Length: 356
Ligand SMILES: NC(=O)c1ccc[n+]([C@@H]2O[C@H](COP(=O)([O-])OP(=O)(O)OC[C@H]3O[C@@H](n4cnc5c(N)ncnc54)[C@H](OP(=O)(O)O)[C@@H]3O)[C@@H](O)[C@H]2O)c1
Image (cartoon, rainbow, N blue to C red):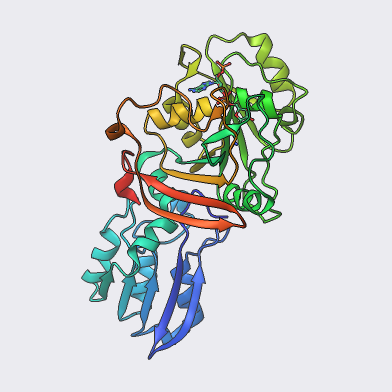
């Protein structure tokens, strides 16, 4: 609901009692701390204020929001306990400095790991201008995402698929390759029924604009944003029919039928899409993995064996020659959905791994 802003919540405590609380809502001008201070009223004086992110020290863009640091100083709070520094280069420590200079005690690091995870998308976006990339795969026990004939619906059970939808809900954009679009004719909408501030932007990598105007993606483009990346050299005639149907077509550099993924991510960042879930297929997943562009991985694994050397592996491309080259996940969490397993972790090879 707040992307590309951070998720922030705050609690004001006086003599061991919660006297105010608040959280950031994008459409309201006030930040979490200000809501909490207003609720606390005069009890804010001398209180401890708990917040998961460093209070901001700058006027929000377009003068949307006054700095929270000023509100905390004006309310004469006694102590601020913040989980983490704000990675935003416009803040990064200056909020804490200003509070300390005003005589307010500042403590940092409480539940820092949880706080960093909560705002991992924001941290990547605000420091790089690129979306946080989460690769999601549904595979069999032997690592296949489709049978020899290309059948992939459904490898996992209903409960895992619901969890996958819940994951989708947390992202600003969702991306697939044209191979998947042609094989499955997916619609790629957020079907959780939960409220969103912005609709989920659907993204397809399609160098030669093979996506059919009759596809579910294009037929729903007037209501659900559809962004098709193609090679710069692709003709205008092909673009026109998709644009007329409501899709946006963007040309980027390409080589050997592979679009430049960094250019794709940069374009998404320019549109303030702070997070991206990549849902396949194998070739697209292989490109993201081999270029170390994945921040977070989730594999839904079903206890099924598809077998066969012509089945589709979950991660395509050239693969790695040596075990020491393999992508190793850390901070791995596993969940169970009936007999299916959900495994999530972060890549050690990612350039931005220190951010979250
Ligand atoms: N179980 C699952 O989780 C799951 C999820 C998704 C898909 N699937 C299955 O996966 C199969 C499709 O996978 P796929 O590997 O054939 O197709 P894909 O990865 O969806 O699409 C590959 C195509 O995307 C285009 N592309 C453009 N830029 C690219 C880049 N930088 N890197 C990679 N590809 C790029 C290329 O076609 P152009 O050159 O024409 O642009 C390429 O051939 C289907 O059977 C589908 O059912 C399973």
